[in-house]
Image (cartoon, rainbow, N blue to C red; front, side, top):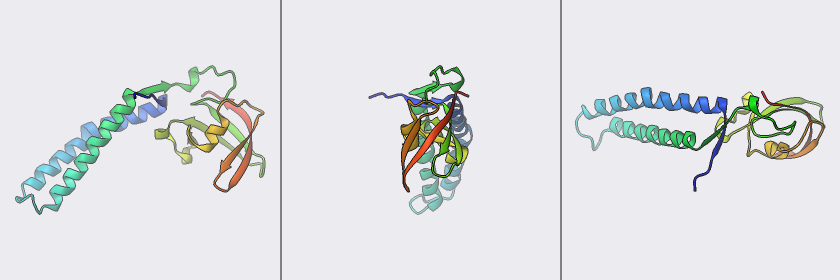
Amino acid sequence: MNTTVPLTKYGAELLKEELHQLKTKERRIVIDAIAEARSHGDLSENAEYDAAKERQAFVEGRIAELEGKLGAAQIIDPTTLDAEGRVVFASTVDLEDLENGAKVTYQIVGLDEADLKLNKVSVTSPIARALIGKYAGDVVEVQAPSGPREYEILEVKYI
């Protein structure tokens, strides 16, 4: 079952950078730590060796995970989208909370690149699911943890 992983162009670059860092720097650090721990002798009671082997397992697992995601990636450049004003993956949406008038902007991104501090919401989040397929001027109801909230879509951008 080979499914594609949607990523924005920016998100794919971030994963590629992390993969490069793991392969070129982290791997070397772990190998050196294992060699250092081995030089201390008896491995059966060597906490440094155990910790280094655990770190190696984590690094190699993350490398495999990133290679898998990048291999299955469907990279979407929002600047090339022509969704005729619809909210789609990678689009940036300006919203107004109809209860308090607060305005917010979100970009709909893949799970790996979601970061609420950067106003990037996962395509699987409740707000993204409510927005997908809608247009500027539409009002959407989002099931938030604090209860239902209504937002008006002010603008949909592909930037």
